[in-house]
Image 1 (cartoon, rainbow, N blue to C red):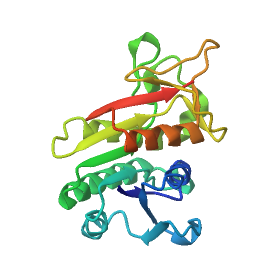
Image 2 (image 1 turned 180 degrees about the vertical axis):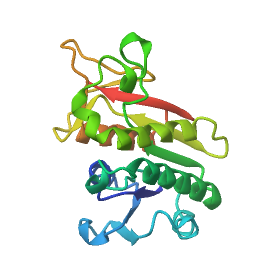
Image 3 (image 1 turned 90 degrees about the horizontal axis):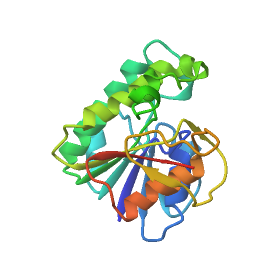
Image 4 (image 1 turned 135 degrees about the vertical axis):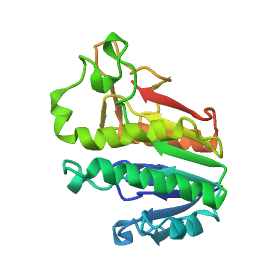
Length: 220
């Protein structure tokens, strides 16, 4: 299977790339702004591409079977005033490029913001929301917008994999729960998933599809 990973050097994209590299049945193309940051792995094809150049992106994508969208404008601009607009613009270009390239499937790195939490509200609007996330709210809203951009998409199969409330580096345990539209919370009231286990869930969905045109989530 030929898979292209957008944003392959990012906070979430890099662990997904590392997980994908474990499987000899995957031919991986890593797409990033700065390919010098990519691991020097003989099994990975590195491609530098401007995500906002839709025609160029479509040309790169068209020789693949599936795309993993882990692109984000970057942590350096995560708290800037225009990160929401940059994020949404990037999502729209990527969706259009996937459609133009005629690809059958798009797997997207999502966020927890749109998951149902306390009071039946979206996490971002619920009493569970942590003010610690406030500086990143425009970026978080940009990721939430991706889910709503995809909801009515009929031209290709897609999934939006939402992590739990906390997504941090940790261990690859392979032991976690799956959910759909509600934030997963453990017996101690925590909602979390390691980057490594999140990446594992993404690649498992890639290799063994179980979700189609829907959001799902993972957590402990």
